[in-house]
Length: 149
Image (tube, rainbow, N blue to C red; front, side, top):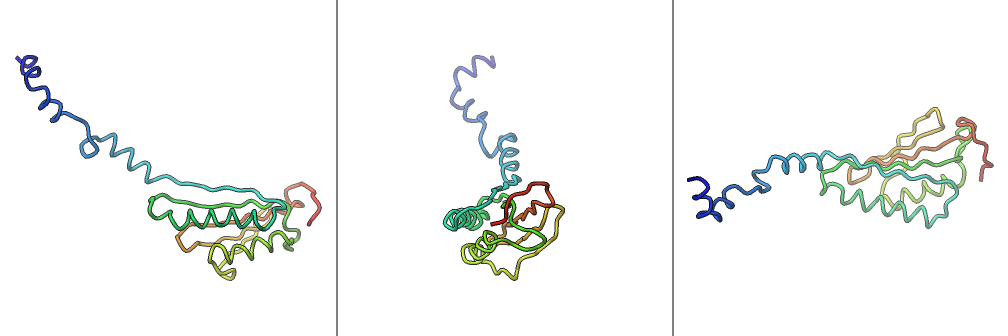
């Protein structure tokens, strides 16, 4: 009898037993997982031109500005090779620092500076809430000897 009823009321059966966003546990689980995603933006630098640095920083600014809408956690890391020696920063880092202040709309004095086994780390919290970290590598500490620019 069930088979015969199914044939007669097919549309009603399909409407009542369909999977949708509201009733599908798998869909709800996937939505929850997509909100709990951590996104890490990682970039390396050495001797980039100022326009290249600015282009990267503008992209990071755009992500920071729109990151709250996505509900995801974003962090940006720049690994800067051979840019510090005995806590003295080279011209490329100073150039990046001036661009950070103007492009990302943060104050340089709001930076957290920390010594690390590989050199130094500069850290900001951007206006949109994203962490922005610059890792400054001292070649004397990591065993690579490039000439300082």
